Length: 192
Image: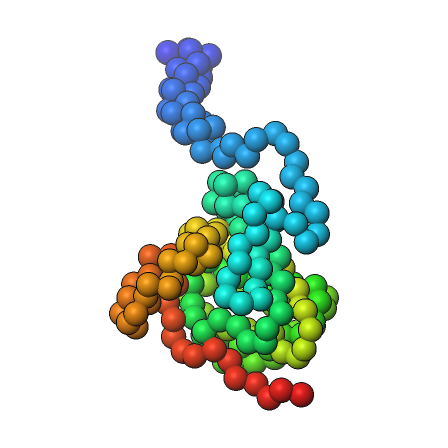
């Protein structure tokens, strides 16, 4: 066999072996559309903020559907003090950027305060909680990566789904459906 013929056979075989993988990689690309998204401060991506509990409003900035599930971003305006129970996410990293006000955070065994301009990161499977401290309005930009079912969960709660939950078992089941596990009470703090 001549060298040129041998090389042609090898290259043809290599091409036929890699073609299916190239096709799969091409199909794996996510369709994010071809338009940028701008959402003005204090407004919701879809014009319908999510209201949770008294005085907490979530303004979606980047929706789960915008990123094919890669990330979910919302601005949370909080009027009342306090925050969520100590919990963990099975599959999402969570991070927070403080826009206004002051918050107390506990991530794993670390506890610290964060104020406007500070960023806090909470890795998946690490218990965490935060609480707005002090009077007045506070704002925090929150990110979930990947998005998981967080946006859907907040919408369900906003629609009243959690009002029918009566037992701890029902609460655990509800949050588990959305990739969370409650592991303790909300943070306590001294009011100044």
